[in-house]
Amino acid sequence: MHELGLCEDIVAAVERRADGRRVARARIRVGRLHHVHPEAFEQSFAVAAAGGPAEDAVAELVLVPVRAHCGSCGADTEADELITSCAACGSVDIELTGGDELILEYLEYRPAPVTTGERA
Ligand SMILES: [Zn+2]
Image 1: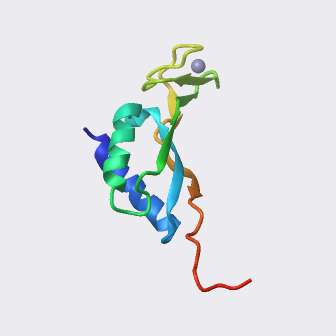
Image 2: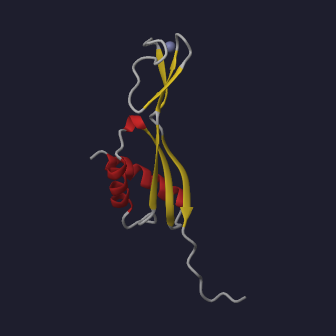
Image 3: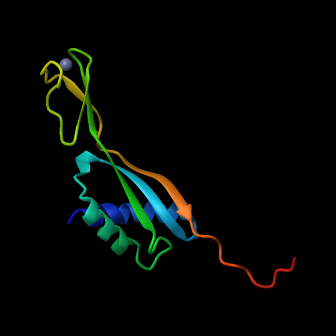
C-alpha cells in the first residue's frame, strides 16, 4: 500500500512544522496523480503518526483534480485521472498543470497543556 510511504513523508512534514506542539488536525491537498485512496490514506496516516505529536490527529484529505492546458486551443481540462488529450479539441499537445500536488495546507494544534505553578 503506497499510501504508507506517502503518509510517512507527510507526517514528517507535519512534525517539522508542529515543532513540538500536539497536532489536532491536518489538512493535506493531494493531487489525483498520486492515486491515493481516502480510506487507506486515513489508516496510513494513523500508522505513520503513532507515537509522535500528530498521533490521533484528524487527517483531512483534499483530492486535487488533474489539470492540463492545451497548447493548440488553449482550453483547460480537468479530470480525476491522467489527461492524455484535450477535452475540447482532442489535441495531445497538452501540458499538465496540476494533479501531482502534495501540500500540507493547514495544521490545527491542541491547546497547550495547563502549566502549573503560574499565579494570576
Ligand atoms: Zn485543445
